[in-house]
Length: 322
Image 1: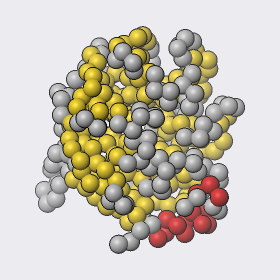
Image 2: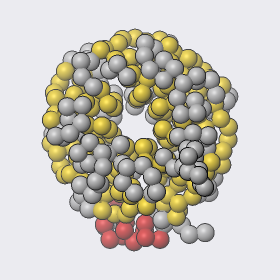
Image 3: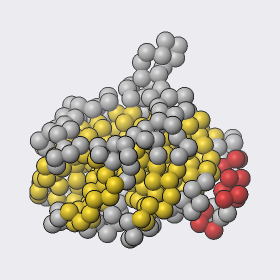
Image 4: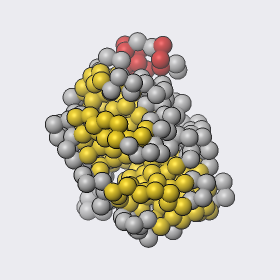
């Protein structure tokens, strides 16, 4: 399926028949983050249960390979290497970053950091891993030596971090509704965008390098032109703070999720709705496959019948009926 050539009607008709969700048991507690390896063969999930689960994608089905253990705190975010499909980085509340090698099933490195880490972003060049903690300190780790090269303390609430596709600009979203764009490695402030009236929670760059998107506490998603730094359009179909965003491989589709009981799939070219995925609980992480129209996500589901314990499950949407 070549999405970029397709009309909105064709996209809608494709997802009208490819809308099956499969669910997989992954963890014993809440799943905080999901992400695909750059070759799309593996999906990783990080959880409050301190573990990292690795699944293989086999013919529209996920099969659990193994589980990495070693973190002593919640695994809050994960990020794969942009061109090396075996390397995965994780940020944890245990004041460390770990690099895992899925080929050898081993932890390749543990990097101590100064605080409880909540977000992580591996630069597309592969050279630097940025990690942010609860005290708004961002550490930049040299991915060759696995040592912290530089640290930057910010005097505002840093909610999410992201790189541009050429790895020379670094983006932070903050509690004042702004996006700060800094040069890298110089860390000089280039510009501050007033993106939202409410807290700016999440930010994502599209794989083709044309756009980035921000999600906010005002329940809006705004789509930006990377070069012009102009807001192209706003998606306003959600009613709760936007927690997570993901672009499809060709930049055409943008998934956004919140505490709403749907995940919205929007068309970046028109802003219109392409599909929606019904969910029964808040969704905190979504990730499009790097080459297929498949979306992985995880919700704050509870185990039946008492619904007291977190389910810790992963879901995969975009499948044809069996």
